[in-house]
Image 1 (cartoon, rainbow, N blue to C red):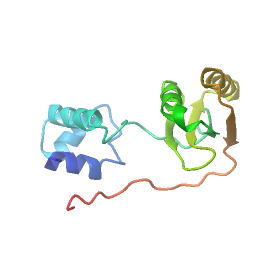
Image 2: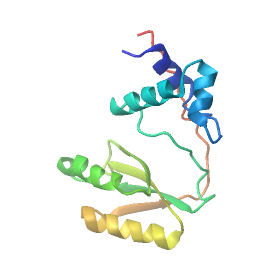
Image 3: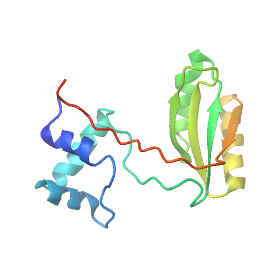
Length: 151
């Protein structure tokens, strides 16, 4: 199912992608393959929904403002509303929770006014109210996971 290159990319580059003008070339050189091979592998992993994005994660509120948002969405509308929410470039990621507040996401904007405007538009577009949870204290949780491919 996974090639040896896929396995290396999924395990070794969840974090610490080279910070350079040519990160994919740098990865390719470190693995002894071509940049095209890296780009093709990442594209295939994304098409197969094993990865959703490749990008930087910036500490909350270091550049702009961010907040955790929770919504209580009727179960039969959850997929549709998640799709609407995902269309906003300000959405970092979202996920379903088994709770009354069943759709959670991180919202990032340039400033508080922009954040509030996006929230207002989202409420209008979805018909669902939001629970706004601003960051009061920052905690670091390492979300890199070693994948065991021996199953």
